Image (cartoon, rainbow, N blue to C red):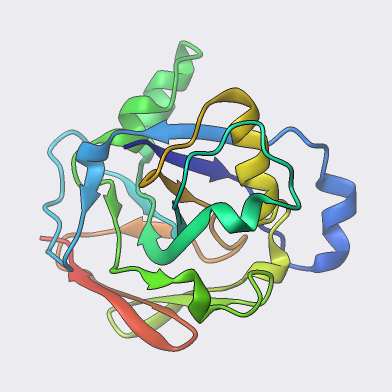
Length: 204
């Protein structure tokens, strides 16, 4: 199973999209060992002192996809979840000093907590999904898929030109343009899709 992420994929206003959309999507990968499921609490890793949270919708691939068209791409999604894409900011900064990759900063154990999945049939329009993140009961991020620079379909079609997507692969589709910040030990994270609480855990 592969975990694929897309960076810088949201705007604050739909009017911003055309000027930003160049076709060059920012893609990275994460190991499956970074996943945390079942709303288990996540230990704060010893390798970092600065973890940034990003709430994201996660698409699960339902069948093998290679070189697929944008128009066909939605049929390759089987389920959607909500997750947190953690970044060890200090690890990333050190890597960037030598023009290094994002791998360690994005792929540490516990870097990808995700909720249970909802079937794709639960969503009538992939471009009209609301989601949000609360930390310690306070609203931190609010997202809507109409504000994506690249849609679910465009992401899947683009990635499939470079690598085969297999059943069960996961795609973190980007975080809202506003509201990201640092997470701390003891913080309680709750993420919802369309008001339904699906992800609920603590950093310990």
